[in-house]
Image (cartoon, rainbow, N blue to C red; front, side, top):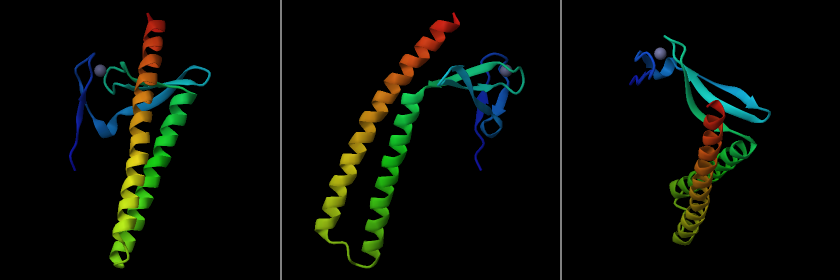
Length: 126
Ligand SMILES: [Zn+2]
């Protein structure tokens, strides 16, 4: 197994990614910051801020990825039984592309949203 090491910006100590203590802390009602604390100096490292909207978008992305997974699984099964017609394969492809485009668009919106939340959070810390 490959072990990734993360370096603390504050004490320069190395922590294995498996041992990193990532946790969410409440900033405001409904808004959490995801952070990790250095195992050596306890310095708090900021990862991201999440609110209700970000959690909903992440949930929707997860559902859409499951949909793609199901389409592929079904196609594999039909293929194994030699039942996958070219027409069905094309239909699957266009469905997967449509869902993937939706995920990409939502991920971009989520990134922008997270960036806004992070800016607000870091503003407030000053
Ligand atoms: Zn440290």
